[in-house]
Length: 326
Image 1 (cartoon, helix red, strand yellow):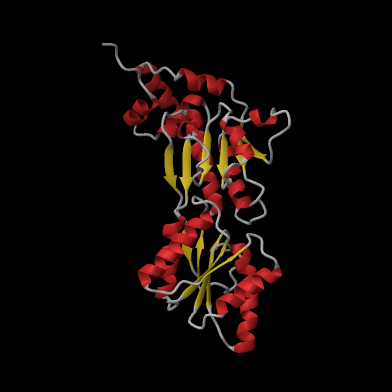
Image 2 (cartoon, helix red, strand yellow):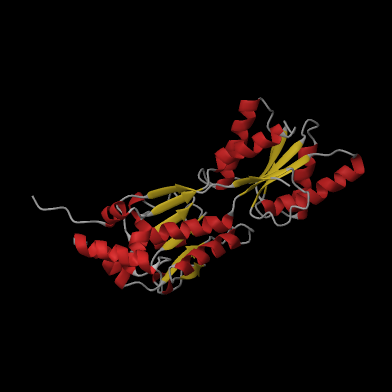
């Protein structure tokens, strides 16, 4: 029987290092000290390590860039810019550029000039995603995407929105707001963050025997849309708190709730899912910070691992938001 070839996993286990560190040391990339790099190379020489041919060929063809596709329907939301900056920061540690993919070019050429791609929050049937599937590069998604076949999906990193919705609602209840309304964009497909958050809200209401008050608006509501949402929430006299699914509307609605408080004396506690805590200014009783910058970093790190050491199976990871208060 022939002896099994030594793998990067074997080297990592024997040296007490992570697979990513060993791969970086062998590839001459990443943030690896010279002492660690020398140690890895010496162990590889002694054990007769031979790099995986397919991975070696992929590295040889490397163009030194990864792609990020944010679909046009959500690009104006505040969450996606820090996510992109986080991905760019991680890419820089591996001597990569980050290419923002905005559309599929007519000749298709520029889409080939990346070693892998991150896809975030694409809608079902997205034409750019369909074309990316056909490219011979690893794909990592931030959030799940039903359009990408499992054999084309190198990795998934996601936020468990349904579970985290329950976490912030529990905190609101602990702070005295036991009957919260929920303001959300009209839900997308079953895997969308908006649908997950709505499920989380309805599940929490059932568990806590709280009558749900779910108000939906367009993703980018007009001033009249925001006013209508506020009025709908206040039409229920039992509501004592409002959770917003996204910061873009929470900031605008908070101004209208303040006007109502000044005119009528009625006050409700406000909470939101946020992409930044820089401008709280006493607005929210509590908030769930999605931490988009480290989310982007983690997505790019997962893609780096897929490029450095391809796997036959999809790697799944969870990104954890942070519950914050004033």
